[in-house]
Amino acid sequence: MTDTANTAGDTIASAMRHALSLAAHGPAWGVNPQVGCVILDSDGNRIAEGWHRGTGTAHAEVDALGSLQPGQARGATAVVTLEPCNHTGRTGPCSEALIAAGVTRVVYAVGDPGAESGGGAARLREAGIAVTGGVLAPEAEEAMHPWLTTVRNGRPYVTVKWASSLDGRASAADGTSQWITGAAARQRVHEQRAASDAIAVGTGTVLSDDPALTARGDGGELMPHQPVPVVIGTRRIPADARVLQHPQPAIVTHSRDLNAVLSGLFARGIRSLYVEGGPTLASAFIAAGLVDEYAIFQGAVLLGGGRPAVTGIGVGTIGEARRLRVHDVEVLGEDVLIVARERDED
Image 1 (cartoon, rainbow, N blue to C red):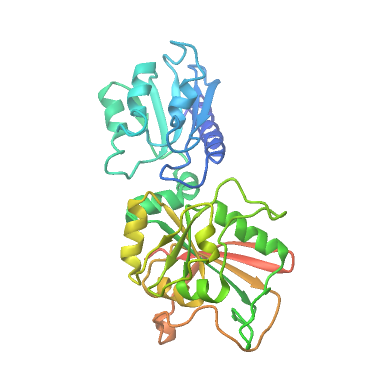
Image 2 (cartoon, rainbow, N blue to C red):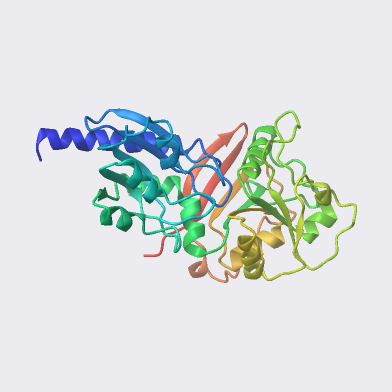
């Protein structure tokens, strides 16, 4: 490979890394992915950038093109984290916008797995535009992991959260559980709630704890984005339950069929579900094989008894154990947050 080719490759990789950083500015919730775009002129100079700011707003490519003067994108290269879409929804196809703008090359990281939105690369090639895919694909796959997972599975991305002692207990022998973890860990939970489309608890948790299920700042104020509260189970809940006073109208499923619940939520546009309580509901999701990510908060305490954080997940022997992959570990004051995911099958 020549020095010129190496330099060009470095320029594209640098632009893609910047596009990935731009994508992170977009909201983590909603039906659309976080996407970033950088426009380079024929000399490799960055002349525009953009990202998707949420459902109903311009996609990243159109956002970037919108900052240019008419004709300024002719001969340019568009570097985008996700294959440009090829369908009309609330906005038009990004592939057509790039063709109309006169770009001569499009570089993307990850292909669009959507049955309706995919196919943008083929459309661009039909129009005579050079297309390269797979640039920094591992980094982009990780950044878009929840969205890609939900599109591929056709259901919301499910995160199961629990707080436990170091010896795996969700409550003490007398049933008390406030507080196993400290203020920093509890605030991180609120941040995770705010990054989710919906938050789920079982009817048992509503009846025993009467949670509000809001996402709050460290001063107790409501965060700008609130997850939709979802109550799963067949037991009736009181008309004055705090979850029914939530800023978002609560969804009360009256069902124990988790697959049906997830299908219904997906049909409502919910793409991420934060399952917060309690042990019975968490265990049911695990046993059904419906968990994409675990957020396990461990307090630096020992309880020696009380209710375990999960139980009855269908594991009878060590050979049946659900083996996870630790994705991240974070120390929060005296507590630890472990983020884990199911291992990829061999």
